[in-house]
Image 1 (cartoon, helix red, strand yellow):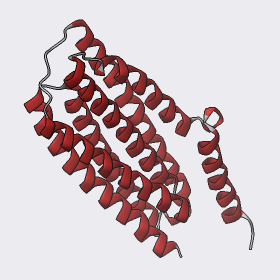
Image 2 (cartoon, one colour):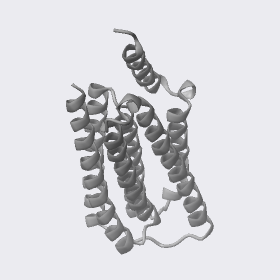
Image 3 (cartoon, rainbow, N blue to C red):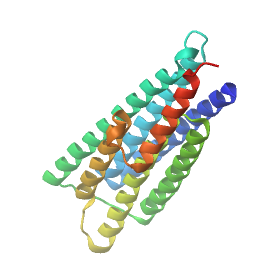
Image 4 (cartoon, helix red, strand yellow):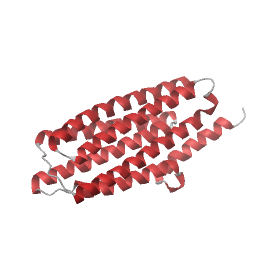
Length: 222
């Protein structure tokens, strides 16, 4: 059972890294072509996600080692906190970049190909987030659940960027910086939820309860 769990975590980690790396490359290209700070920031976010994917794999490798197997859940918890910190830092960076764009606006150049790529990016992120959430619940892994939450955050950021692009194309009004600030606050809140479960939302609270319940069973005498 533990072996299958380890394989599922590693598979999720590799898929997480590959998907976010490819998304980062595509977003960097369209971000530079459209001169969109929001899209470039989204690309940076995807790269950060890829880094957190490496942390997932490192966590599982350490936990699978005989020397650390007894501390598997502690290792996973530490990795989850690291991912949460990455989420918070990303949220803060988005706020800073958004304020800078408000103070010094630059003209963007959105086009139909950019819209199509943004939609494809959103679908890819949503699919990955769904897979990670489902797998994380199945194998009771906080690390995978945290990675899935981070991917869903990234997905919502892309949705905001897409809406901003559509609004700009129709009415020539650039609102992405303002909306990005609101989304970044949500991202920071979710990051804090993984560090401090008592402030978490309803569904995150249940995830933590499930993890704690599983932890108690593992510690009970046979």
